[in-house]
Image (tube, rainbow, N blue to C red; front, side, top):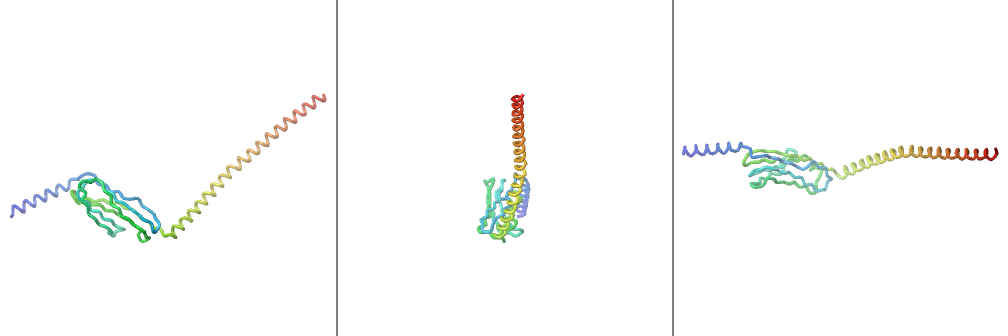
Length: 185
């Protein structure tokens, strides 16, 4: 019995020491932050890349666990999990963390996060009106810039036209005056 327990202890120590050897890279990527209007459907994803046999995925909203699942991924090098909200509400706003833990062969963990901001229809309307004011202000600024550019160019054109007409008038006057003096003289 003593020999059997010693062998089991030695075998478990060997197994534990083999777990400390890294089994390659381990990357978790998650959806970018999103802003949506209440009632929309939102889908955020958490993707894992690496090598493992067993993975646990825990979704947290702020610090509260909302979903927990374990999956065998023996031959997969990448996999994605989705968290879907249909008819999203303002209460669903928050930071969603996807914590991926490789349980076999090496225990390691990584996570990503996505911030979801849900706006009410009133907030969206206010933001749209604010955007319209900004858009109107930009449009007014463009009109002023165009007028400030066109008016001086128009004035220069009119002045040049007037000067040319005047020179042509002077040339005609010189020609007429020359012709009179030739005729009279």
